[in-house]
Each structure stands twice: as structure tokens, then as C-alpha cells.
Image 1 (cartoon, rainbow, N blue to C red):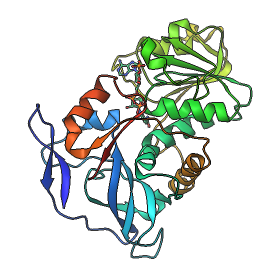
Image 2: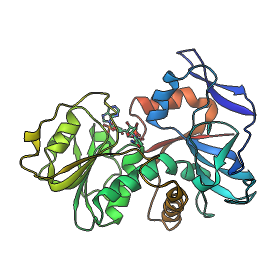
Image 3: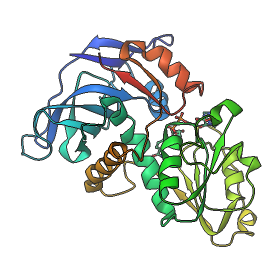
Length: 307
Ligand SMILES: NC(=O)c1ccc[n+]([C@@H]2O[C@H](COP(=O)([O-])OP(=O)(O)OC[C@H]3O[C@@H](n4cnc5c(N)ncnc54)[C@H](OP(=O)(O)O)[C@@H]3O)[C@@H](O)[C@H]2O)c1
């Protein structure tokens, strides 16, 4: 089979190559990958691994062979699946509890937007639950996690402030449910019960200065790759506010993956979650698409089709 593997070539860091077929464990199904999406973290990890490594966590596809222990969806089922690695290939082995059936209305590309970005949006928002009537601020709102988080927060009754980096990045965010869209967190007025912070550096300090007493700043990324200096005094106007770190793989119990993926897929099916697919191309176009994502030119998710 073919897989997108790391190379040692900086100009073309990934290449389509013939690779060994996966050998599923007893609790793993063999899935034919139809679409996968790219994540900023995966682009970073490409550089940190040697030659011949296959990244890939977000998969939409079809079960070719059910897990040998009889768990999970049967052969022929359309699924959304979360893998540790190796999803950028024609086939991948997936633990049966890390996948969910796809309703007919949900495409493989839409499914591929859900595992990392969808679970991160859903689970970071849970740190502020119940959200009805609360002010929620979301940095990186035009990105993969952000566009889903804006929709889920608004659907839960939150008053959402979306932060973007440039005016053109604001497009469509009000339609997704944002009450206001601002350019840079510095423009945010007032305080917020929940802040989803993924930009890092100065943005994280600004977030801490805008959280309300007993509110929560969920720190789940550092897209700017910059450190933040904070001091106890920054919390004086918001006593007992919390800074909560977040990692989607370990944020909740393993047996919550399938129900959460099923929930997200059902929200697409009933029309209340509209995945924003900014780019959808063949996986042969990986290099160009990765560059777009790295340069902040993708609104929502970048999806590649295994065609
Ligand atoms: N902890 C976890 O479990 C977890 C899970 C998923 C993602 N993450 C991390 O969370 C961040 C957001 O993920 P994502 O998938 O939404 O990424 P994404 O699609 O690339 O979106 C990131 C957004 O951040 C904004 N941004 C602001 N400053 C930036 C900078 N200096 N460099 C790059 N982007 C910047 C960009 O919006 P503008 O261009 O409008 O400013 C962009 O839309 C990433 O850093 C990712 O690695 C962590």
C-alpha cells in the first residue's frame, strides 16, 4: 500500500511511498482511509522524526476488517477514527474504541475534521460547562479547533468572542455563532468566564488579564511558539481564576473517545455543526497544503483525499 512518509528532504518533507501494510492487534480494526486532515502539531512532528515515519491522527474511512476480538464497527462500516500515528496511508489499524459510525449525511472529509480538532473543541469547552449565558473568548478562532469551538460554544448558549489575526480571517465567524469578532485579543473588552487559548506568548498573558474571578483559561496550544511571563499579581482582579492545561489524548478516559466522536458526527448530521473545510485536495498535494496551513492561510481545516 501507499503511505505519506517523512523524508530527509527539507523541500519535500513528505513523500508517497510503498510501505508495509498494518498488522492490527486483536482490539484493532483495519480501516481503509478515504480522507484525513492535517494538524499544526503534526506538521511540527514531521521535523522531529527520522525518515520513513507515517504521521496521521484524523481519519475518515471504511472498516475493511473488524477487530479480531469482535469489538467495534463491522467490516463495511463508514467511520470516523482517531489514530496515534500512521493515518496518512491507504490503510491503518485503529483501536475499536477510538472510532464511531458515520451517519450517511456525513462525508469522509467532514469526518476527518473531527478527531483532533473536534475533540479538542468539545473537551476544552467542557471546562466552562454549563455555558448558557456565559462569555467565552476563543483565540485562533479561524483555525481548525477555533471554527468548531465557536459553533459548539454558541450552540451551548455562550456569548462568543472570536479572536482572529487579520480582518480577512473574520469571514464567516459571525454566521457560525460568534457574537463579536475582534482582531487580536487586545481588543477584547470586559471579562470572560472561559477562555480557550492556543496562540501563546503575549496572547496568553492577555487572556489571563481578561478572565473573570473563578473563571478558567484553558491553555491548549502555543502556535506562536513564544513563552509567557506571568505573575501572581495578574490574577488580583480575578481571584481564584484557574489556568488549565489541556491534552486531548489524555483529557478524558479512553472509553470516552467513541461516544465523543459519535456526538460530534451526530451534530454534523443534524446540521448544528458545519465543519469548515478551507482546503480539500488530493494527498499528492501535501506539500502545498501544508505550506498553506503553516502560513495561516487555511480557514478551518485542511483535508487531504486518499484518491
Ligand atoms: N493540546 C492539545 O491537545 C491540542 C489539540 C489540538 C491543537 N492543539 C494546538 O492548538 C493550536 C490550534 O490548533 P488548530 O488545529 O486550530 O491550528 P490552526 O488550524 O493552524 O489554527 C491556529 C490559529 O491560530 C492563529 N494564530 C495566531 N497566532 C499564530 C501564530 N503565531 N502562528 C500560527 N497561528 C497563529 C491563526 O489564526 P489567525 O491567522 O487568524 O491569527 C490560526 O487560525 C495549535 O498550536 C495546535 O498545535 C493542541
